Image (cartoon, rainbow, N blue to C red; front, top):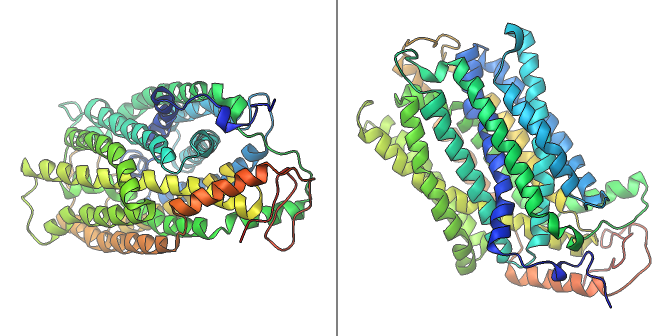
Length: 509
């Protein structure tokens, strides 16, 4: 009788409770995204601490580069790791405490550090937080293709991940602005209160720890049914050729190219968002909180619509369509203000318009994010057919590598824009206004930059080649290969077959 160990078909049913529990892990990513958000950390370091924008941009970029360089190694290590708890779960459990500690320490200035000493402290904590976050996220993401091998079921599973990730991000952001940075008589500019950020760090740390452990425990029972890594002996040269073959998958390159462009655009937007909120639109922290809260409903719309649209239009067509519309929605309010067609600051219409726009943009962006994650999951089988090796961790790490680096580049560009328009760094602890001409110039520089980069990122995705029929063909090819026992072989120099595990094969043509 055939053993069920390593056989996904024998795994327990992937019911709603498991999907929800698995998705809870992304709450840590969402909360961590608030702590790591260039929108918040950039504003905090420039306007609250008083560091120069160019220095802050360099800190963010350098921390992202270190994280991005380590990500493929983390993914590769989790693909080949062997333990009684499988390949992924040891990493997930081990990440919980470092994530919580770094989240707490990020918003605290020990012993009144200033200048270069404080910059070095922030850099170290940022690196620890980003790397420990990757130690959780990459193995956790890599579980999705095995938990849900079906072309459409994995879209539904990943929709839950994105729902909890975005919902967690929005909920904690609302709490940050509405509670910890609340504007009152003691704090005319609540967003500049250092104690508020420090207290927020304690809450964020506790939530991150709980969600990481919950997600790992929820999927623990699937460990016996996940595919174990093959026992192989490779030279360094063979391993390098194998990684190269995996990372040069055409569809993966299309997604990574798109991520390169959109990552720069997102980095620019994130680095400037709070400056625009508070000094372009004249919002208070409470208004930002409630505008952000309106986007919570967008997560519900997105998680419901993503699987339905993917089935109706297929993944690539859906993703391109919703991303194009979301790009347009994202630039409408600023464009109207520059044209003199928006109400004046202080009008109740401003938060209503911004909230409605954020709802539309958020729902569309979430649909696109869910589907593009599912597209990456489909690359797993496509790559396995071409190389003979399953490398979920490496593929998800590679997909995240480019946006991390380019997000840092975008943060540097955004902060250089602040320098270019002469934004007054470190002088806003009181109620000093910012010259409206400075904010208008900032909008004129940043708006077209982000729009052009995002449009180019969508255009690159035209080169993605996997659809439902090709995915099902890949699954069938892998099933046929698994039924054929072959002796371990060396890495083929022709690039068609990468061996060393039972079932290595030359893909059908």
